[in-house]
Figure 1 (cartoon, rainbow, N blue to C red):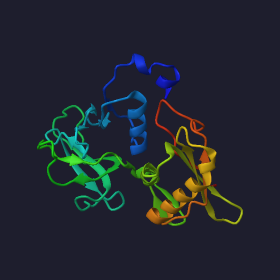
Figure 2 (cartoon, rainbow, N blue to C red; figure 1 turned 60 degrees about the vertical axis):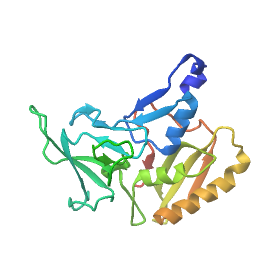
Figure 3 (cartoon, rainbow, N blue to C red; figure 1 turned 180 degrees about the horizontal axis):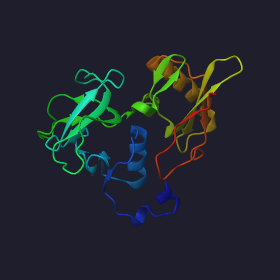
Length: 241
């Protein structure tokens, strides 16, 4: 967005991008690709405690992250019971290093959520795959007795047309003692305010359908009105006392 705002798009001959730092939604990836006119983008997860940036890499088929199984053992565990989940189920990444000497890690809890992807990738690589990072186990919020990860909301919003990639989840406890959720979502650039009511209803219906909670208020706001950050974006504002 900043590149376009400063009129630099035609001066940057960027064709492919390797990006990381935080979990990104499909909507955000599409937006970055569109704004920079990229041919392709590749996801690279990383963690300072492990081997820094580059603990795996997305390939041209975008069917998961090929992780360096010759450098570390990856387990996917239930974050509450710490027992292995079935292949394909979401859980917390737990790693054991095979090459680090000064500061080895043994069954280190990363708090990152993902799942193992069975089978071989169409690219032909023999390296195993895990899904893109889907969130963090310590980001979980409890709303009306339902465990919710922000990534679930992100996933829902990424599948809805005419909205942008920026959103906020606001949790409040009212005088009646009940918890209420407000979801703020930007309209896509070029979409008018006359679409607000329809978009709000679609989002509320999908949240109810997919995670079985009612988003009390879905507020559609202007494109560019929600704050941007050069660091990790804050999505959840829990104002419950």
